[in-house]
Image (cartoon, rainbow, N blue to C red; front, side, top):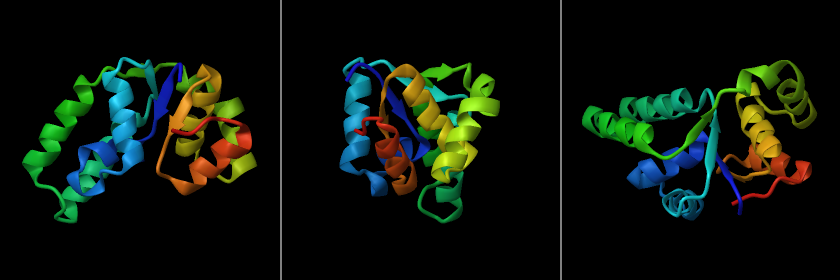
Length: 137
């Protein structure tokens, strides 16, 4: 694997103790091994929202969320600043083609553009990635 794109579900999978799926832990391991890792511009908001929802559902405390957000911000991940440049073309096209949200299509577009493996626990996004020829972690 030369590069990795991780989505919000994957990040939540290694940040939340009750969600630690093997794929999410594999993504964290890749990060720790220095595999270049990219996320679209909305990724920090996606992860923060998931953490806040966990807090509201009493699956995490406010302190847990604050700590997890500090972890997220310290990860060696490159936020792709070109995400918005592709929204009117490739991203919207992928969303239409595969029935994805724009947010999920942005992960797929980024993985395609970077020639990266995609880490996701979202079944629809994984299905679209397979159809598009993008490798999955």
